Image (cartoon, rainbow, N blue to C red; front, side):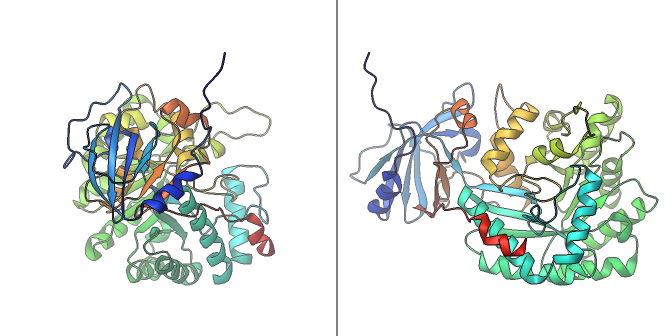
Length: 452
């Protein structure tokens, strides 16, 4: 029996077609998650399938989305057409939690046993030995080029800010933020231990750099006597200076780690009105259900957003030599969403002692998050976790959705369904910025060999 010849990937001609189309063209027959389409201005009703997917036609003109209609509903206007034959289209991705100051040091400083403590010690040794401005700039730029090629539009990085490192890294971040303006919206958050926040002099030294660079005030929290004092100082300082807060929280299997509860109580106690993001929250999944429920109710009341790092947490948590891990390391994502708590997933570390792998590819992050945390059947609005939800947490309201009047910053895929989308790496994707296909060539690891 003869089979029709169907291309196995997006034809190389697609970028050429886009270039030839010039200032205006239609993307026809595209599949989009309905949750990622801003309803206002759409010329016709959306009719999602059971997985929340819709077929649309999208008119791009001068780098902007000018019209969105149900597939086949648009009147022929003679403009060039690029037929995606049902291929999925996503808005460019938003990566809320990364560590690009640490990225790509694995070749020179691997984690000897893959444990959390092994990672802490390895990073500290590498930071003290190697983290000059030149070293950090080259590794961070390499990471940003990777993220851009994969289709990321906005990214927040945590910066190891133990003095004197903050005096080196924050200026590098500033330079890169300027260099990458218009390609990746780059934000930074300080990363200090919460007991350091209780020390007024040490805290002010770091907080000054946060204020100067317009960054986010962040810390890692754990159960120490200084926890409440450190939180009070951070919340008070954030209120005084109009800063957002971002915490690494309870990244452990120990059920007695309850600093998430303390953060929610502090937010309510201070009447905090800015954005609060908490990452990890692993121990929550190890606590009795009634205790976890009480904490989640407080988190919802405080308006806190959560970012889960499923790949890194599964890599580090419950790792003991010669023993198969017994749990996945992720937090209670479904229970959070049921309470209306904003939930994102993100890359976290890449090729450093905390996670030996990764490439800041949000397709990989979403794919693995779906598998690890069962974000499927139905998929519903979980695609927002790598797009619109982190964008809102970062105050980037022009990112994360496909909308009339918004920039044509899109990622095109050959895959038509979630099953197709999540079964392959989607290495043949096409990334559009302002309606034009970018060069998706990834940087070669050999560029960093001399640093290693």
